[in-house]
Length: 108
Image 1: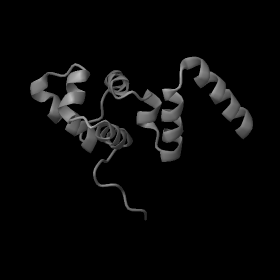
Image 2 (image 1 turned 60 degrees about the vertical axis):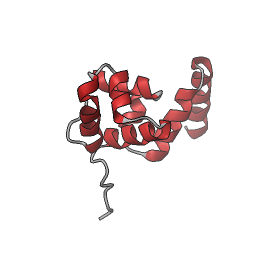
Image 3 (image 1 turned 180 degrees about the horizontal axis):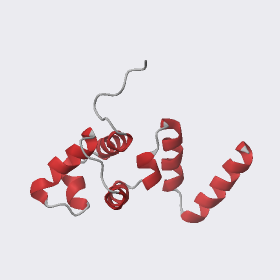
Image 4 (image 1 turned 180 degrees about the vertical axis):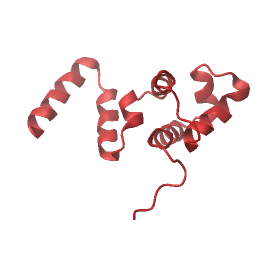
């Protein structure tokens, strides 16, 4: 049986922590950016990262927006697909659609 990552027990928690650390942000920073009171933001984001609680979709959308990723990225279980989603999300909307169509045509 493959060993599970111990730092996070959910996909969203693992992706949240990874992206937050990539940006060099504290848990408190993310919490405040999504509208959580400063006094409880670190604890709340920590619970999400550890998988103790999973954010509601509306909260996950706020987190995704704050981190500059798509909502799908936060929930994607496959790391390679998540990286692709993130790369697509970084493109301007018109380029994103064009590139996505090209990829689908190439794969399909």
